[in-house]
Length: 309
Image (cartoon, rainbow, N blue to C red):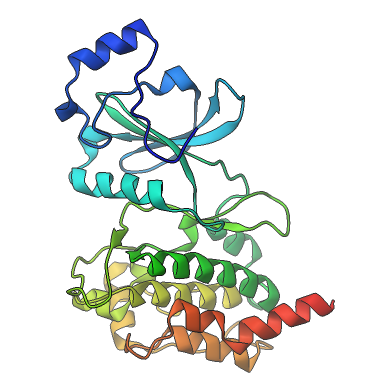
């Protein structure tokens, strides 16, 4: 098992004959035919699905270790370069709070991305399960999640990678343990973007978490920080700062930029409110970077309080 995509020749006679029949043009992502079933036993049980494919459990035949495999149907992918970019980025990323790719295979019809398997569920489900009229998570819980998310994004940004789709559905808990760490997943919309490079313009992502500058079609890595600010807001009160009935109303709410700390905010510290405001500054030049956010007194004070308990 390794982080680079699997392009090694197989020992299977049928697989070898297949690879001879299928040219590299048929395998544009990895560049060479490879059969996942040689190294992994893939379950038929689907526990996740999306527009391009499914997520299943797989077991490494040599070690018996369990992993997750995302099988992407190539015929459904309109932009091959996006998939190439996702696989390339995942092969280079190595951080304790980011999904780890361990293998990659490509056959005639599918690209199979094998990653570590995380069993704790989505942050989205934790929000739904914990939201009441009085709010959502405690400041300690929220701060722990946000701190890990900022560390992941700080790592990405230091490597000139912008995620562009940070949302609770793309944040998984490693396990069901109460103190489980998180992992940022799904790099399908991610891309490299250096400081000083021409601004990005594609309007990608999920409405609730889009920054004002992204909606204008002129943005940089600061758009990820806005998304984290939205998530921090939701973690503390249980609902988004910019809401509406449908995408059009949500977009208009983001453009207006007005949000409040009313329902569900009773008892939340001034430091927490200041932290959120620092991430939701409309001017991306004034918005905190991931490194600056990690130094905010709210994260520091909550960590100290937790250690004293």
